[in-house]
Each structure stands twice: as C-alpha cells, then as structure tokens.
Length: 151
Image 1 (tube, rainbow, N blue to C red):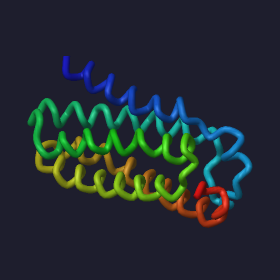
Image 2: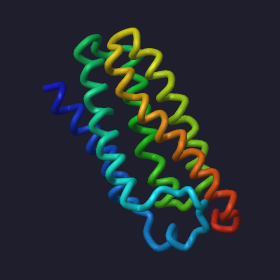
Image 3: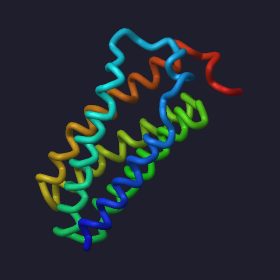
C-alpha cells in the first residue's frame, strides 16, 4: 500500500510539469548556450521521478514518518511549485527562491536518509546535481530576461 501512495504523490508532483509547460513564452526568452535541449527535460525528469519514488519508499519502509520522510514530502511540494512559479506565473525570481529551497531540502534529505537507508540517499544524488543545474539555468534565464518578470 505504501508504494502505491508514494507513486501517487510522485505522479501528482510530476503532473505540475505537465500542467505548467514551457510554451511560447519560454521559447521567446533568451537562454544561455548551455541550455539542455528540450527533449532532455522529460527524459531526465522521468528517471529522476522514478528514483525519487524508490528513495521515498525505501525510507518509508525502513523508518516510516520521521525527519527523512518529512524532508522527502517537503521536496515534493517545492518541486511541484517550481513549474507553477516559473511557467505558470512567469515569476523567474520566485522560482529561483523555490529551486534554491528545493536544493537545500534535497541535501538535507540526503543527509537524513543516509542514516536510514544509504541507497535511498544515493538515489537523490543525481537529483541534487540536476536541481543545481536547474537553479543555475533559472538564474541565468532570469538575468538574461529581466524585463520578462512581472512587476
């Protein structure tokens, strides 16, 4: 039963990216030359969401509700909020604050999960790398397009 609930939570989080898509607004923004190609995002996020789900399940099975699981839930909320802030509200500034909080939460989760399930913690390492990249990209796009942020 716990695996089903975790899968539903991860799918609900992932749906934020499906609901709030880049669209024409994003395509018109200036982006750094190192921006990953559009096809990379759904591929990478699919793999990461699978790892996020497995990691959460491992922690839940090992400990249940504790610090690590609380951080796991918090990162889902922050993850889902980013697409809404960046693409939905077009608030690159608020999205940057969110993605920085997400990165910090991921690192805290890795530390907490390593005490419960080292495998669960390791599953979040690629996620941390990708979110650090996403934060850098978010900041770069915001800096290249200061007039695109609503006042």
